[in-house]
Image 1 (cartoon, rainbow, N blue to C red):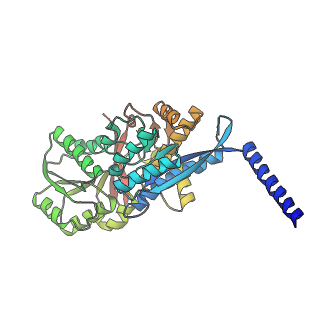
Image 2 (image 1 turned 135 degrees about the horizontal axis):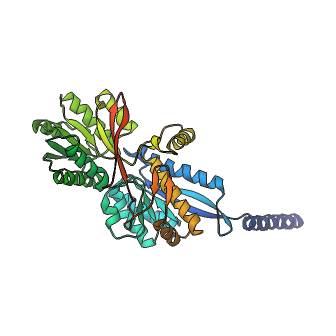
Image 3 (image 1 turned 90 degrees about the vertical axis):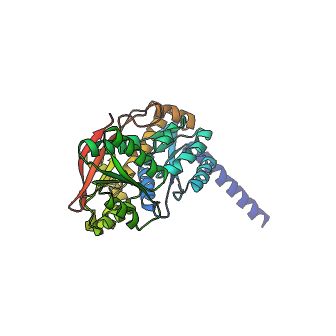
Length: 382
């Protein structure tokens, strides 16, 4: 019995030693990429869209067996649910710091990104935003925050100028959901309208939980508004257009970013016909690698992407490219490499200005025609 136990011990130690030796011989450098997005609740579909964009890029990078400083790098996804809640978002951010992530791709909500980005800044960890568009996020003086989409200054500002100069509307109403995103987008739209000589006849407010918009829409109808600019969630935008149709309103609906997706179409149904929305960047399907991405995404996840997966995919590849350029996965060196990055992504060229915002951002106006979102025009930054 004693001899058996000795043999068992020797065998176990030999196996352990062999595994350690093999681990060193075939060792991999694990690089954790954090993701923070809403994976539960009303915004879960968009949060999952972001996560899937990152996941696809990570899987492709691992298939390439990228080497850093002589070791093969294995990129590992560390995805967490921030529930679209700023308080939860800060807790998630600290958990990702404690997990030792090298970088983070997030957020969907500007209101979550604003406080959470401070947590990562204190740790020196870079954050790349694929969706959160409030300009205040990158105006906090942080050197670790980057963004691969247009800000509200570009997207909603372009919407405001276009409404006055191109659509020639005289009476404009606005509505936002009082979130950091919604309020920020309407503020930029309002400034652009007034700057172009237009007039805001009414400002209405709601919140991101409301499903009945009868009261504000009745006020907008009474104000005889030609156009309503709404900054909020896609499913709420759809409910607004349905109620507008029920109230017999002829007011043109124009949405902010994050609305021109299948969620809006499914909820609005026929009432969505003619609705407009401004989205970030150029139409993905019109870009050289866009169709290939859409095919890969559909094959991997069994459905089409929403709005933000292409940006999350590009954010992840921009980071991986920066890691490769730096030949290091330390956060400080990733930040330095990102500041100098020139990456041609599926959404266009990615390079950052001193604030960390995308250089030369674009915005595209879409309209629902025949039950689908159709690009109308694409406009770049002034």
